[in-house]
Image (cartoon, rainbow, N blue to C red):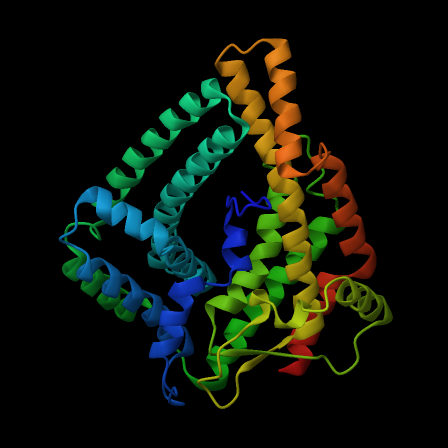
Length: 370
């Protein structure tokens, strides 16, 4: 959950902070990759090394200490990175990658539930409503228990050495690890096809839905995956301007950069130095516009979501009409946000994407530049 005082909610704040400390540790262990080494396999090994470093080093901590440290160091981003890589490799046709995507998604989901519950409780404390504080505290305790249960079942909690060693062996044994141009083309196609499919979805106004989860939230998730795919291959991708951007894209980019002069040097846009001689070139302007959209939708989405969760909590706790009105007024003041029509926002974003053909342009330039 995002607010001016640093309230965190979702994962593409997750990526708004790039991959944080976890990404930095990954970058530190990158070395120049041989032409005979699989890019995808190397990309998978790095976050697995991060998991190994964290869970083996801290395996003797108490459950409470380990949970706090895991949330503080944001291991959620590492789970998400592995989930993204497994998803990208699913077209190989192996059930293994689908199973691994689900495995890491379960870990990311469990940490996300605790993030959300803690954010809601903190917001209720800021507003000063004891009824809601108690309600969200119960949710936070339940989320802590769920996370602990999930982590124990994962094997990372109590048997990290054996669990991670098996993960590494299984990835090696189950992947069709290509090298050179064939693998490069495979990865480019994964990112390009995803963007093209999303372009078709926004043209059909797929995310115009009264249910915020199926509408605005899903639009943001789908846009975010383009960014995640590229960031998951950090060290194997580089951002670079396309030779001839279309007028609609160029004008849009100029306007956004005028609003945000630091757009191209923000955390979202940082990539490590390439570890291969011919990294995948990602069109910079289009990529930057997608990051800007994800960020803007995120801010409005988080306000809308916070309002929804607070309304549901007040209904569940039997708050009076006057108390509901007072709480929602304080919430809007705290968030410094007006009520958000999430369905109308989803319509506007889809219209802009469809008219400018941003996603199609991103995919086509990705292919042309490589």
